[in-house]
Length: 339
View (cartoon, rainbow, N blue to C red):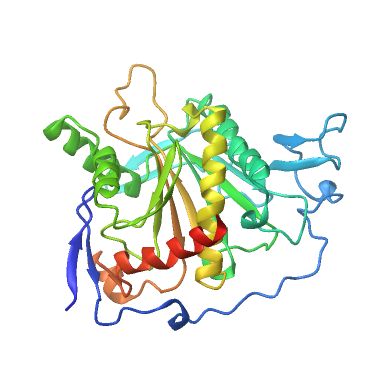
């Protein structure tokens, strides 16, 4: 029998369609054929992108030249621009903001044929380092309220360029989806004087039903009320609302665990498209009370195996055709094989 499960943070309901209980081979997604390089993101093609903002490169090499391992550039066709003047207008029911914000691309490797999953842990660490440093730098612009980092892997997940990359978008408002998490976490904290994410982490660790893998600093698991098949969350054991506070040692541990998780997804699910999203608390304005106690930053990895359709759009419910406790067993086997 199918069952309904409620997300403990934002109280969203999910239908776990146990009668379907699809296996990895039941999902039909076409493997993408890699286009031949070089492309605009390849080493030696630096003149085809805007000038770099940040890079991790070999000593003795110059900006906007070969010799880099990770490179951050403004998006050539940005959704928002930092050069815009902040303008806010309200006319009855119509509220408008000017197109102020930042839109950047993190090129994860100079090699056209490698994906983030294929990189050594040290280079994944350098990609995560770029995440942290760019978020720290964008925080200095007091017009910006929220910064999201995401990765669209594969055309079906929204990628328009195959070369391995992530994106950063910083905006002058806090998004509705983020507000739901913040408000849910804050309501739980006001009632229980504890972080909801810390409690989820401890409960899952105790039950050990949905944990994929863990190390000294991080844990990965399939949420109890997963929206999508093989949806994965990665949380730090140490409570923190802001990714910009993470230290280098923890960043190395995150790189190790992230590689294990992405390899498990790639091998167990036949290299599916996926979205990776870094969830963090908003930037704080001077004198503003934040969510340091109630919110807990985390990463979500969402394989693109099913489509959101009319029922989901019409109700806010999701239908997950894979039982989370069975999905985790499939991913655990792949992680165990890696070790």
